[in-house]
Image 1 (cartoon, rainbow, N blue to C red):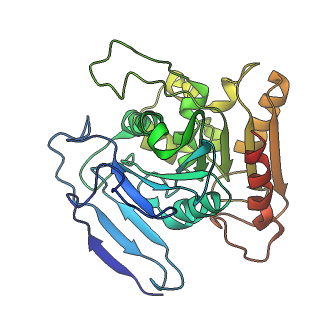
Image 2: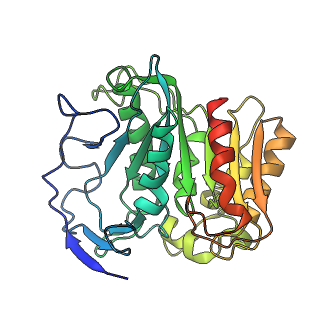
Length: 314
């Protein structure tokens, strides 16, 4: 395996879709034109590690992000506005596994007639800075609003924007679902005037609960510091906030997962069914953790086909 570390050029990110861009090419947009709120004075330099061979297998890991972005994959042809899935990669909340748990799925969605949009977010902890949950939540809400703002240009149905979380990215992706925030017409930022509500939530081996027996102390401290309060942990335990009328849910998880316990998804499913929320699951006895959409010969690796069927029905 080739490992390559690159410090990225942060200024080389286009803000808008380039004119004349060919369909199904991906492009990157910044969430904020200037310094992202909360990152004023942060001196980190973004680092990229290629964990694959860089040719047949692209598997980049990005850390120390200061400028959060969206990588947008659009379908080649669409006669009507499409569903958009904003994907939050895993990486233990200290890095983003941007391809295996991001762009790989986004490309599959684009090939299936949807928009796959990958969030490169500011992680809970960088080399120099503790960001915690507040910064990550700001990034996912801004990602939804930016997508909604560009919905017409990108041919996206603004009422069919949802989130998808891989692994630890699940706790970020599920937050706008459990704590919806509507429009704010008085906000000075025209993008922030828009709603960050979602039409669905989905996840593969997602972290969804901050309860100690499910999340463990590491994630609790990454989100809330050395002494998390019960109120904080309960507020970001998704299973405690499900109510009748909430949008549909899709969950994929191997029951032998030791990276993020399947109890996260099992509790979410149980709470959703009790609340009368439509939920579809793809649980298998074995498969472990961190497989992304890749077929490693395990039954759990077939979850992507089921997800594509489910998402097209929403």
